[in-house]
Image (cartoon, rainbow, N blue to C red):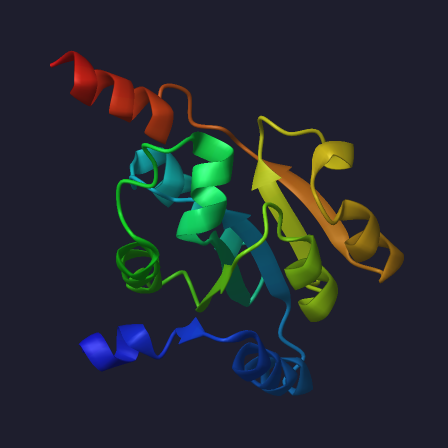
Length: 161
């Protein structure tokens, strides 16, 4: 069982080969990204909704280094291996790929998903890679945002207790 979860964590070259097989079967590929440091109901809802837009969901996961750049030295709380395993364990996540950069632009450009999604706290023109996906004939969507759930607020609540 654990082997099946680990098999969903890819290096970019292996992911591109897997995507080629999906595309031969005309499967629609959805991509999203994030730090996913402390998983919560908002993440689950968001990822399940993202997967419902297509046949396969690829999740770009910020490396520990990029999380520190974005969230500060106290983050991430969970290391990249732990975060990748937790995310890959969800049935609605088909692939997890770690990226080192501050944004997933290089990754999006390399895989060219059919649909790029982010949470409803973004406008389409604010989503990194929106132009790349749109210029390739893909779609860019924002998904509903489950109010009251964020890793930052969860960390604050833990610190306050």
